[in-house]
Length: 149
Image (cartoon, helix red, strand yellow):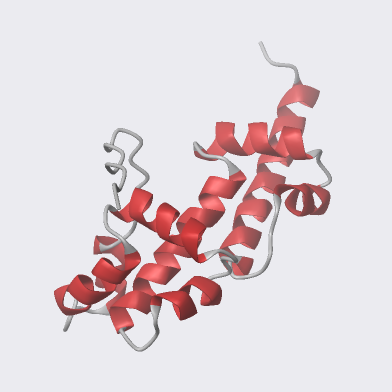
């Protein structure tokens, strides 16, 4: 049987983890790192990473990148910004990292997504489009073949 103080601490930790997740959701476009998130939650970076993964199934960094890619998908569907502009608008500092993560999560490069998906959600209410196009982290997806060029 779990002791009452241990259970109370676990509940306090879950509250702090939800606050970290909420902060990532709000500030996804800001420079965020695990150390800064951990300081805000009064935890060590290692403890935050372990507890966040246990609670939400992915690391804080993976969650942040998923939120950034989700927002990037919406901006790319609008079609009025270039891939580079979208990259920086969602808080990514490297176009290469952004493109790699986008392709891993979405299954196609951002330029292809921008070209093909803008038409796919035309006329669809934004709340439905967001749900239908939500990125899903798929670790079983095959890695893209290396380019020989």
